[in-house]
Amino acid sequence: AVINCVVGAGVFGLPALIAADLGRNALLALVLCAALVFCIALCFAEAATRVPAAGGYYAIAARAFGPLAGSLTGSLGWIANGAAGNAGVAALLLALLKPWFPALGIPVVAFLAIAFTYIGLAVLNIRGVETALKVGGALGVAKLVPLALLSLALPFVLRADALPAAPFPPIGDLGSATVLMMFAFMGAEAALGVCGECKAPSRTIPRGLLVATAGIALLYGALMLTSASALGPALVTSGANALPEAAKAIFGGWAGSLVSLTAAAAMASILVTDATCTPRVLFAMGRDGLIPRRFGLVHARFGTPYVAVAHSPTPSTVNT
Image (cartoon, rainbow, N blue to C red; front, side):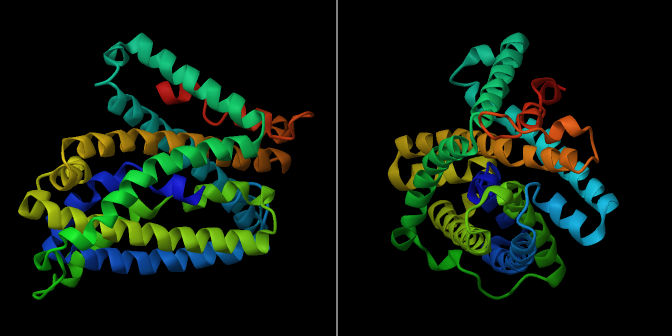
């Protein structure tokens, strides 16, 4: 869930974006950012282990600071992750699929595609969290395998001029690039929504957060070095096509097309996993009476928070 929520479309344009600011020293921003994010993951790991409840960051904030802080945290988190962020992901997925399905350019068709997507996500998650996470896991494998294969090419294409070297960037530029890179690591907090359904939370939650964070940092670093070595100066102008262009330069045109399709799998995996995790925030808030209590209802047969799932988010929210 952590990997699916974090590794999205940002990784495809990340190498070019950071290289434009720092050149060959882009890896320094990644190392600094990874160290900071690992500290955040440690905090989440400890807090979620002490409060392994549905709702994740909402439950932690409410337990530590009271219902007002919990309500603010849950509401803002749901808007950012469940509504605005999810809508952006859905729109990007449609944009990625439009070249293969031109009919998606018709507004009515696009609306129906989004509506049926979210109806399907709701049905999938109401029927059970394990099935939903398995589907998300399968999509996660579909996006990670091409990226992992691309990163494995690093020993064969690595160039000395892709590695950091003096003169090093000013601390201000390094700090700005590090803050920018932070966005590529965000999303682990959304995965905390299913903490209440983890087996052996004192072991599962820290291991999941810390192993996933370390793995993501290593993957990002390998992809940055691979793309810098494969494209050279052209990396800066490659934009969001940095990874497809690098794959094309190393393996050929088929690999570039495969990595481009991987972006669609990345968006789909985020939608599936977020539809599992984010509703737990609404469920916990409803259970605690901070929003209408019907959001805290559990399905009699499937044992899932079906009202919260059906509202996180609705197709009309995404369309807006």
